[in-house]
Image 1: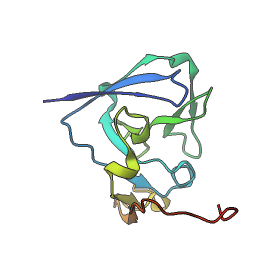
Image 2 (image 1 turned 120 degrees about the vertical axis):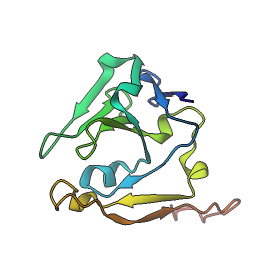
Image 3 (image 1 turned 180 degrees about the vertical axis):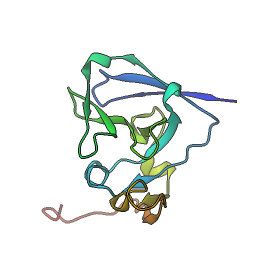
Length: 148
């Protein structure tokens, strides 16, 4: 039973739908140069399972180095919506925070971080994990003014 989820960028210009195989989302992150900077949690679907329903003309695409990965973001608000990974070109890695009803900090207490600095295509086909990203809520924590 597949589950259709809707998503959008921050300003709502870019909207999309994705068909997931079930209601379970499997999160991951990557530590390659661009993923480390954008900091999003990714959930994957086959490329045919994602449909842009509005704002396709406002999507910009960024590629670098091998030009294999295609990172799509809203040209108006700058939010990374999804990308076609170099290691899995038959899939889109969707920024989980763009999906309706998904709160990455609450929904994913632990997220595996894969080692994109030692890309699977460059190091003998071996995909390695770099570590874990963990979130622990601290309700009511008060920070002194000027600290952050």
